[in-house]
Length: 240
Image 1: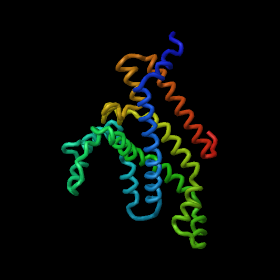
Image 2 (image 1 turned 90 degrees about the vertical axis):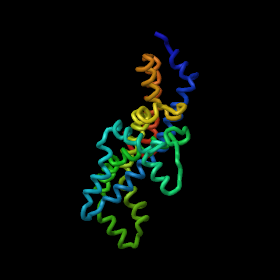
Image 3 (image 1 turned 30 degrees about the vertical axis):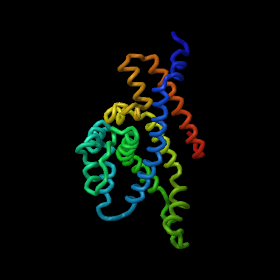
Image 4 (image 1 turned 90 degrees about the horizontal axis):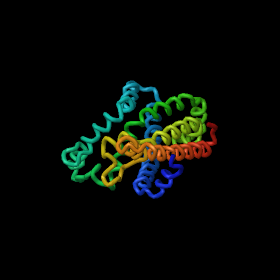
């Protein structure tokens, strides 16, 4: 029994502090980006038109793939030498970029991958919420001369507030637990630029076999997720 020794050690661990900063940066970037993408796609496919089911399937398909598979796929896309993205940018005279090998862009690359892979699932949740909005509200708004933006801000958005709360809560919890992408794409590098809390827990618990220290980091992660989940609940005026 070591008492609070592991928690005291956390306050002096610069890598732990870096992992907290990186995790917060990831959450701050990926949550609003994924919510906006998912809601935009849901609004796009929430209409009756020929072949709309094909678009729904295409947008949802990345969610079915394992994060490990998706991460391996994107390592080839982000490859600085002969990757697809640099090839496309080079064709218009931009780049090349180091992407995952650059500390300034590595986390942003992981954010983009994560938003692309996960937005399909959130899209389906938003679509379910949109299906529950009464069409009579839209018809009345059109009769009154409301434009699309006014309809969205005064009818659609308020009507799916509970759905938005569910999506944001799920995203916050899952984003704080980001691991696969950092593990497969960068191994926490370059220079700990993408090391996250869960990745640091994994390193200490399974690579260094320091389970006590890893458990103390896990407790910190649990408290962070709890605080943000409660805060999100308060902001959305919803009950857990």
